[in-house]
Length: 239
Image (cartoon, rainbow, N blue to C red; front, side, top):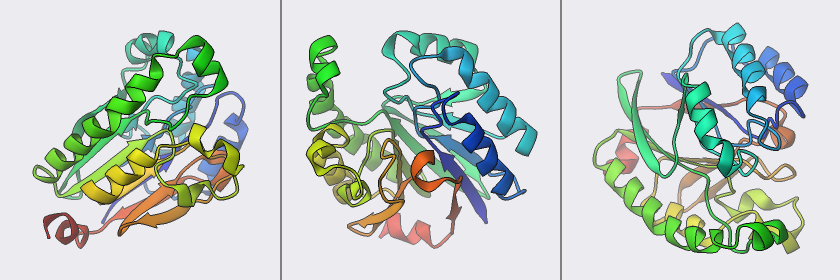
């Protein structure tokens, strides 16, 4: 049975030691795929990806790594991240395909969207609101297309994908943590699995219209999230 491991919000170097402790408790068996759901680094510090990669390699060797950008992977450093860390496949509003235990797995990756810009975004990046409005339809189409081409579809976002996983966070800032439209995308497109981060105080798991949604934010769960890719999931996407 193939397994996917996932984590987000390492904010290296901020939670780097917590990440290393989580790796010590993680299974010794390497995953078929490891997904980093954004905020690998803190404040756009590109160099701090390196100790994260070194820690993963020390634990499991050269595993397949997939990442989405978080809000701490600033827009102006993303080119450097892609160029300097080519061992990671950075997925931004597109899909990549992998083989896990003879299953064709599609990973649809995105930073996600928000219902309301943060104060900082409103002042410095007001154009983001249009991006957040367009993105749900893009992701809806990507997931639907991936379902026709893969056995299992995983939707990965940095920003939260389900209000159920925001419980524990201040409800007044939920609109600045997730998008109702993207939760609707999960409900309508039905990926087999949805993964997100960003909710440091939120819950680790909820279900949206039958879709398991994992919050893998390291400060929230204090561990590496392990997800089994069971063959039974194939029936779900083809029904």
